[in-house]
Image (tube, rainbow, N blue to C red):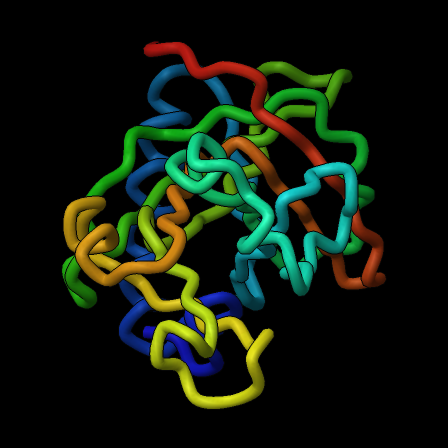
Length: 200
């Protein structure tokens, strides 16, 4: 499903077909509810990891994992969901983000799919519809855990469940879908955070 790595991937033909079908269904549902949705094409997805969410680039810091407290390690590192969208729109104008309940992605075990609905301050009846595929759980290991390479090298692997992730050892990372980084065709970056979720 991804062509690069667990932290940066481009949908293949199978994923693109699944996404297209889901977007059409969601657009029809939104229109039937009396609103409007504008689907945005997605070039690629990715996640950025760090222990410091104030850093917009979210790199994996050399000592971030080793210096975490037990509580922090249990909670996992911060996850920022990066989406490169095929539009020149200024994504910093987004004022509200709503996320659909996750559904299973049938072509890769453990992966989930959500619709990300973005609204600008000037319109609360027209949503930008962004598809998103992701792994809910990941594990970060270092060379001491059996990963080849330098001592400070990190490896990110995906897991089907939280239990499976814990069995792998390393730091369990849960993607809460709260942090977002949108990149448009002009390579302009816009950071957003979902403060809380509501059932609608």
